[in-house]
Image (cartoon, rainbow, N blue to C red; front, side, top):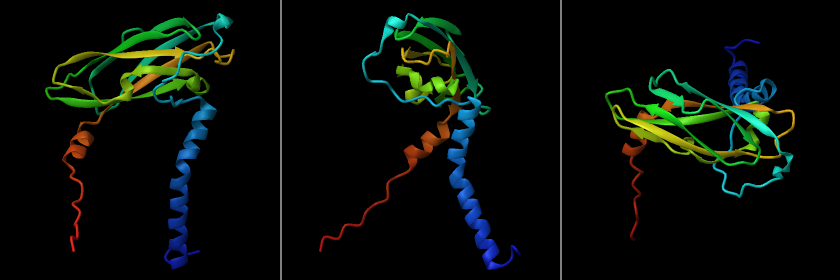
Length: 187
């Protein structure tokens, strides 16, 4: 089949569209198989529930990554902790704006193994909001969480990592965009 023919070109366009459409499910499958990039849920608003009689401790590690376009200081104030399942815990992460300008950042969380992600419940997390910092500002950002007692028994250790992204330009662009004006016909 020649690509210069209309049928060939349409086929290529259809294939490219289908491939783009399939990237998200394909990414999810790869993450599930490899245990990478476990997505966490949003803010947990229920009660701490479940059977805490299992009396099992789990180790959790806290890691940070900075996107290449954001060279701030970013670190967990606690690198690792052991906690009983179902027990509410608090920790924090320190961020330092090393720039000479105000910047807005957003943290994206990830849990490994990915199978543990649905059992990590965050009641308060700096990842829920954008984090504006003035030039040179240092901030401790809170995390309040618990691990569900229903965590599968074979998981004894999990890692919660955050990647910090500079979203200053995106926020500025959103603020300057004006909604389209509507023409109202009063006749």
